[in-house]
Amino acid sequence: MSQVFNWMEEKDYEQLVFNYDKTSGLKAIICIHDTTLGPALGGTRMLQYDTEDEAIKDVMRLAEGMTYKAAAAGLNLGGGKAVIIGDAGEDKSEELWRAFGRYVQSLQGRYITAVDVNTSVDDMAIVNQETDHVVGLPSISGDPSPVTAFGVIQAMKASAEEVYGSTDLSGKTVAVQGVGSVGYYLCQNLFEAGAELVVTDIDEDKAKKVQEEFQAEAVDPEEIYGVDCDIFSPSALGGVINDETIPELRCDIVCGGANNILAEDRHSSILDDKDILYAPDYVSNAGGLINVYHEMKGYDREEALDTAAGIYDRMRKIFKISSRDNIPTHKAADIMAEERIERIKNVRCNHITR
Ligand SMILES: NC(=O)c1ccc[n+]([C@@H]2O[C@H](COP(=O)([O-])OP(=O)(O)OC[C@H]3O[C@@H](n4cnc5c(N)ncnc54)[C@H](O)[C@@H]3O)[C@@H](O)[C@H]2O)c1
Image (cartoon, rainbow, N blue to C red):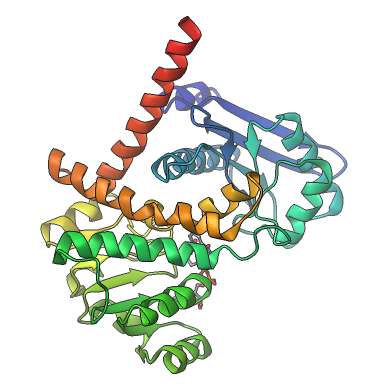
């Protein structure tokens, strides 16, 4: 515990809140990284961490990631996250979620929660009994995947403009890894745009559905990396761009819906060296966050899609910063986010001193 303030100082964290409830056994940590742009929004993850330090580090890392994602998407949101230390199969109960909801409420809107790994919309519906600071409830904004997929398409168009000089995706071959919620809508959009599809999924039925509906070619999961294509679109899991897969790639662009596509940041530089353009994942897949953000404003799907269309301009800006500063695109995305936070911070400081 002695190093927690050092960790906070390192990346300028605002607040770390430890919440305990004896009746339900709740052990939750809420991290608010930065609220310069607005309230800190980020989901609640439930995991059986080996140590408390591991849980603290995870919630801090994830909260910081949300600050960047919201800032890069141009939203008026800060970054936050919550973790609950526990076994999602054993430890969930009505009293646990209600206790958690009360703690979220105690932050008076500085932190807004949502679903994340091992938590469900049903859990959040109980949290919602105690606090209004919950988003992503299906009764309001519904499935975010169509908006996420639409945002990925905008990122692909910006990438195509950069590489081929045109946003036109017709005739381009796109290899999609994972045709679940996001991947399915991605394929639908690409099919409508006239792209050729090569898909894979470990669930054969899902791959078959996309094959039939969108005239896609289906390949085995391990074959997707080596597909000769224009765009490779990881839309299943993280860490898929790594030392083993990069030598196999035969694409010009990597742009997908998955989170944490790069196994490590250095893989962005390796893609760069191979002349493969990487569209940073947290910008490409921001449609999900944009969707719940609109819940806070009174949900309207057309408005959410309108905001997600802005991903095109943001990605163009990232490519400009990348060329301007001669840095890989993932670093350029971070710089774009940091520059926005810094500008708004200055406005606020000036306002206070006036
Ligand atoms: N749903 C959203 O709105 C949203 C928003 C932002 C980011 N994401 C990210 O996008 C990714 C996909 O999310 P989703 O909601 O579509 O999930 P999902 O579970 O609906 O779909 C994932 C699909 O990938 C398949 N899959 C898993 N392992 C695979 C493998 N090794 N090879 C091929 N296919 C594999 C699964 O069978 C499933 O069909 C995740 O990384 C998620 O974090 C989703």
